[in-house]
Image (cartoon, rainbow, N blue to C red):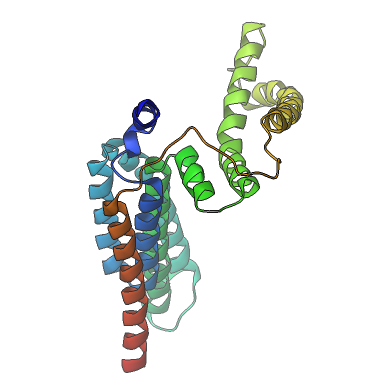
Length: 259
């Protein structure tokens, strides 16, 4: 009981649902967005906004969404409409022209990127990676696989954090870091060496720590993290699977009818 309460506190932002259930929801919305056109993608993204608001992550999700997916879709749309050739020209100015074929391809590509990218960011904001890996291990996924996945997902944030600490240490020693690009490059390049050495040392220390905890021992592992899996989670996962099957089946039927 004490362990259960502690785990609920540690996973406060996702304690409403099992992390695997959230993964099912995100994956289902991404698949449905990719399968259908931009209208369905917009509806799915609006649903993602409501889901983020339900978990209390709307502000952070919306800011990250505006900084990444919105700008990426806008850039891809501009590149597509101007550089995809076609015969039906709907706008032209000098060497630039927009064709109906290019416009259609731009809408198609950006709608898929819009839905799938928004779903990926939603999963990043809502899913606690440690809890998800614990659930996957409980369902039979080898610990080596979950360790590789978790290490890969955490490597960039860890490198950024270490690089920030190294640059702050350089500033405290009086090294100029706020001048022009040339001065910044001269100060930045020598910091790469300590960053790489630190990463190698941390990898070795992590391996020793894992072996000390019998990570590779051929026996059943136990975990202090207890992730509840309620009946509601199972129902939602079933509904998400059914939604994906219906979406793909409906798309196939529409393709056969209107072929």
